[in-house]
Image (tube, rainbow, N blue to C red; front, side, top):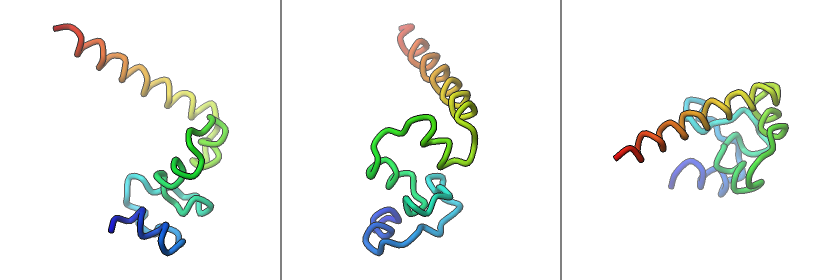
Length: 79
């Protein structure tokens, strides 16, 4: 059983704060997988609330991620 299943089964907060998917947001059992399963896609405001940063900062992070994805797609289509 993985940690997500264990948290859902026991309905207890995840305490594994070194996990890359851990999120300091007890309403969603501190797990990003549970956030997505429970809420689907989040708005910038919802994501910023969970991350504890401004929605502008979330937008900046999103822009950098999209730029990296587009660059990777462009490089993969060269051949």
